[in-house]
Image (cartoon, rainbow, N blue to C red; front, top):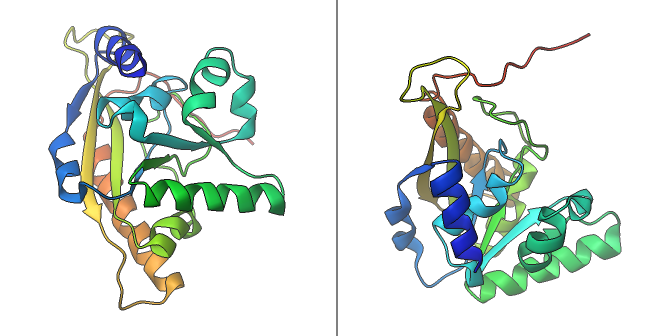
Length: 210
């Protein structure tokens, strides 16, 4: 059912094109992480279902998302891993992720934290977001959503959404944890920024205010 909902929403409503799904075969039969830019409130939740089975998919999400209609009631209870607000909750999250990776599941992380609809650049995020792949010696991928000129060519029309998958990226065993996190972070960011250059259509304009 979840994969059907994903297909309907992504293919028939958003009309998403996906490039690079075959790269996931490089890390078959093991757990993995996918890092993605956060530019669709609901689309980002179901986007991974276009590349991985629902039975293998989990996403780290803010607890506030559980209060969102449909998303919080129908999607997150099955796929969501809530970010902890205290040490006890954080410990549960760490334990859950460790168990899921051992069971060869896929954990999706949106390191930018907050959704910026249709934003075409990659926002800065901390290297500490790479903690789990380094700790668990697990491959990672970058999944970048881009927004390109709609086929109609008319301004104000919804953009063509093309999602790129890059990787796998592996922890460097020759580095300590801190430097391994930084190296993986830089690789993921570089892949996402390179794909983001393909965006050529600003459906939403963001301006910094004082």
